[in-house]
Image (cartoon, rainbow, N blue to C red; front, side):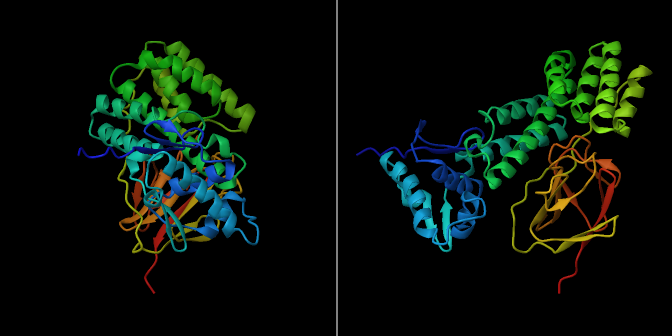
Amino acid sequence: MPDEKVPSVDVRLLGPVCLLVDGSTLNIGGTKSRAVLAMLAVNRRRVVSSRALANGIWNGRPPRRFAPTLHVFVADIRKALRTAGTDPAAIVRTINPGYQLDLPDNCCDVARFESERAAATAAAAAGDHAGALEHFDAALAQWSGDPLADLRDLEFADNFAAELVDRRMTTVLGRVDAEIALGHAAETVGAMAALAAEHPVNEAVWRRLVTALYLAGRQAEALDACRRLRTNLAELEGLDPDPVTLALERQVRRQQPLLPIELPRGGTTLETTQSAPRAALRLSDGRTVEIDSGIRIGRLPDNDLVVDDARVSRHHARLVVREAGMLLVDLGSANGTYVNGTQIVDDTLLTDGDTIRIGSTAMRVEILAEE
């Protein structure tokens, strides 16, 4: 007898939450069931405790006896998988103290996005801008709408979506850099003009627009874009352009050759381990923040480290502890994240004593001695 075909399972979060088998969308129930699936997919191949799932799907206020109801939501997912001809117990596993979604990364759009994004960054760093462009396009093709679009107002979903949106912006800008490096600056002007209109104070976006216009032989329009950005920053944020933007404007005004596209520092994705070193940040305002598995830094109060500064984005950067050290990730911030005076453009491994600057706040990395 021929071998039976194993059904193909796919989870999509870069748009409405969907569970598909062989390309067909399954009905897994209401919002709570989709929220359970999303939390498990975000943490695929890792056990998520029942308590964490309950806190996520009930926004931190689960009922006292949540376990039976939570089990119903898990059962809805398993029933849909069983009906579609898969083995649900092998995909949604019950493992103390909770559940695990046992799917490889290529069965989730978020993982495919991150994989293609990492490949694009590596290609750009190696000078293969055509390869980078191909991978950036493949990464962006994973998106079908706003991430977790049907789970808004759930705090875990909003936080995860905000970070993904920031990463998508970084990917879009990386794609533009690849186009410009390939000599296609003129072809990027229309898209960058539209993006700048949507993000009137995002200097990283406007710098690409200015660069594209200038390299396309449209110096006057490039300088006009500089003036419009300056006006936007003054009227909307009460700020002047940052030094990188001012340097670009001077180059355009003087008709100087533009500097080559800055290549990313780092860019290696490292798996979380339990043997990571303990670390802390010493802030210029006197605060000390010890880092466990990682923190998110930004202007909004939902960040782990809140920096009250108009130059700091709502979710600006993330710092995580890995086996090899600490990894700093800029989350598509408007004004950049700097390490030892250099703006980072991709995930960056830090060492003891490195100085991070976000807005006007400086912080020093300290690797703590093991007790």
